[in-house]
Image (cartoon, rainbow, N blue to C red; front, side):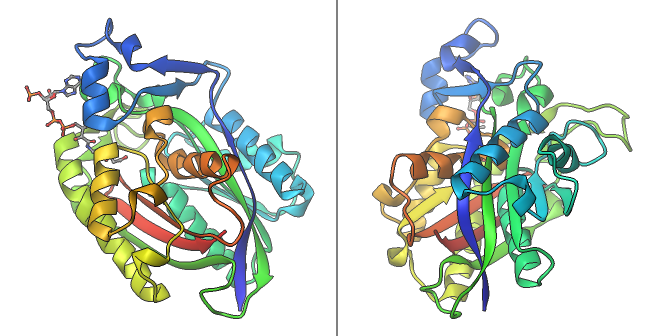
Length: 323
Ligand code: UT7
């Protein structure tokens, strides 16, 4: 059985760090409120010369280097983003060009905060279907560009950044002991589309628009949706929470992460939390969290890792993989 095995990972963050206190003169908020309600302490914010494409390229180069590969080795790039450089062409194609890659194919995937989880599941299908052997999966976002900087209920929550993985086809035995992607579950339900959205677009306003969120409504649904999709993934893989080595959730809110881990019976020391460092970076949050836990030596070859995300749409999903 063909498996999609992680060969390398990388990340890139804008140079500028914005601390919670930096908002205090801009909107009516406080470091205390932001930390207590979300766990966020700082986020990176892109400068004019830092874009979804440039951050994605940097994360991709870091992932290729850690895999010991060059762009010539890659035959597919999937970029998860909701903040593309242009309405079209896909920013994945721009990254392909920046990497000097003129073979293979590249496309964007838009599932907001669940984008990276969707993209890993999609890359796995391309690999197992035989259409690609080595895939660069990138999550890159510049949400700072679509924030309403006068809206305290959203502007303090999000940040910019990028993360990437290189996945490669490898023959496995078809058991849970295999390395690579072992199970995935994806969900969406557009009935919730107005709870977290951007109020502009090419086909409606002809503008880019700003992010709007009914935070309390999103919060209300998040834990149930996350735990349902993870339980489905556990069921497909025939494992329980105790078998996991690491839980790498979407980094939107520490309270959502804690409540989900508790409901699933995942021990606190197995949960990777980076929301304090990066804020909510949408499709970049899971690969950024992975990059921190790999760099500090927590996630090692052979570890069983659960990725999870939930966001606008709503979309939600989980991927189980052995690193
Ligand atoms: O990545 C996609 C998924 N997104 C999420 O998972 C986000 C989910 N939602 C959340 O994380 C939380 O709902 C928030 C962090 C957005 C808000 O936390 P909350 O505990 O649900 O607060 P709330 O919306 O119920 O607001 C409580 C109060 C309100 O004031 P009143 O109505 O009680 O007077 C808000 O106006 O806090 C106020 N508030 C703020 N106060 C200081 C809202 N934003 C701020 C702020 N600073 N930045």
